[in-house]
Every structure is written in C-alpha cells, then in structure tokens.
Image (tube, rainbow, N blue to C red):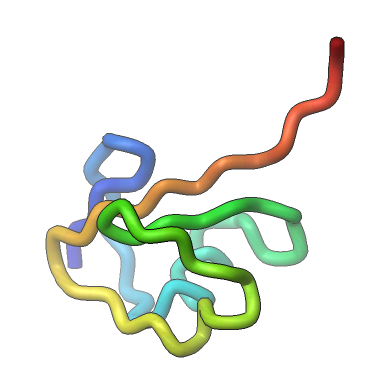
Length: 65
C-alpha cells in the first residue's frame, strides 16, 4: 500500500503503525507519531490499522540549544 510518510509517498507491506515503523527502520527509536493528523502514543501503535493513502508523521526528538 502507499502511504504519505512525512509528506512523501512510501510503499509498505505493513498493516499496523507498529509494523510500519519497524519496516521503515524506526524500530527501537524514540519517535512521536501521528496518523492523519492524530497523535498516536507508542503504547497504541500496534492497535492502529493503516489504510492506503494514510498520512503518517514521524518526528524524532532533537537536542541542542
């Protein structure tokens, strides 16, 4: 299926947000996620089923000052 990952089209086979993050190389990393503009906490990612055309935002925290 095709999703928009941070605004760019991305083909994935995963059907849940947790599986998509693993497929995309985010497994084990601390990130914030949103699907179609709605924040998804880490504990709920395995419950969120993805559909073709969904918009996923993945944001990693940055350090600095």
